[in-house]
Image (cartoon, rainbow, N blue to C red; front, side, top):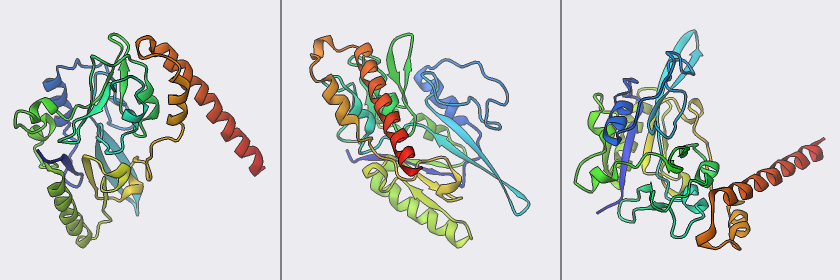
Length: 267
């Protein structure tokens, strides 16, 4: 089986949020109590959580007296160079990759709920469920794909904004869509070709990269190696979420001190 990808043509997204509902239905995820203006704007709920793996984000901007209203489906991007996998401290890894499809998923039988993946994901995707102490995120509907089906969000999308297929084919489609948008006077950007050595959720951003909230140059944080070094003396059998949390807390302190030092040097 070839590597798979979902192409997200945001020029066709109308924020119906059918993808949010389909994700919850297929994965049997409970609803969350929210307010009408969960924020920002009509975005609801406010962010991803252990119970919400797909979220349509809202973006508003006034330009030349007109309101530009755009949307972005937010979920795990299934990076080729995944920080969550690199950060996962258990052996064998709880955060792992399907070699055939490129899908990144959580093996909950191995997960200790330490939150290392939460700390290091540049997109803020994984969240630890406090009840069962497991990391939760989009699975790319790997269970459906293994049965020859497309992801639930793609299946339900009424506007054709979501397309599923082999990654090489999705890249070709993305380039063709971007070309048409450019001819129509738009400023499209394809996100996912090179970011983190290639993503398996590929965006065509019709308003350009700066309009949305995606990091321009996402990368695997350098101090993941330090985290591994701090945890190395602890055996696999005795590794706990608390130990990982202490190590992450220490590295956060070191990071803050380094930033403070750089600010002093500027002054």
